[in-house]
Length: 353
Image (cartoon, rainbow, N blue to C red; front, side, top):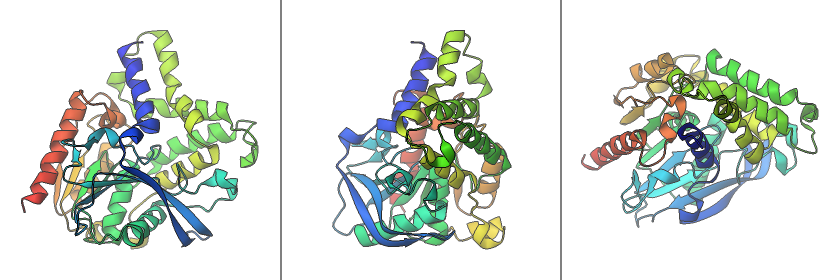
């Protein structure tokens, strides 16, 4: 296997399986009655979670790490542990499966395509209920995440000001726009056009549709420089299908469609009548942004508009040819070292104030 093929395989492995063996605890919290912003309601909605480290006596050392659109609750496990980016000798680290995936309530539990339409703010309200009522927390050292995890982190800071003392945002933006929406529309079209999809009432997963949808997504996740390294036809043919193969193995099709719709339609300004400055003015805590310098999925103009409208922000661009997935590179790579050292320095700086 070539180095490029190894990196693709590693990225999919990180998204689906990493970290569970090293986790302190996994569990499920049940919300008795949850109402969605777009309408609809679920009784006894489950929220899956995972934790590392130990919560201190006064419950002041927790960090919440939230996943990207495709990722599971343990997405950041390779950055979690004694002495690592999120040091479990210091912090109690929490990961959560957002509504609609993992061990949280999701379409395949019975509702299928009739599952309530949810958005990023719904995810965050459910997470807040779990942290406050389930874990008894009144504050977080930081809330952070990558990609859709940055969407959730920003909504945490906007809707619950001061609950988190800082934000850690990897490959971030404040919204999806037409650029991302048209990519997601194409992904969804590939799935729904599969005859096996049957308007979401399938008996077996539309695997071929998900495989082809991943092929549509693949070039947006990486940079032009990276794609030029795929000089061998066999390697290229294998790698262009790798992301879709991962989806077909780990996702329910209805859940995947709903998740990407929630991500692509997100905009922090919606409750603020389109006023980005008004939305982000509610964030008055330190923010670390680590964008990828070669991101094609979240363009630089979205990163810039976010940074320009935050009061206390540090921006540290990641130099990588891995595009949007630059943040996901494994331990031992320059990308991992940069993200880890930059994030640790930011967190250590919080402790010194």
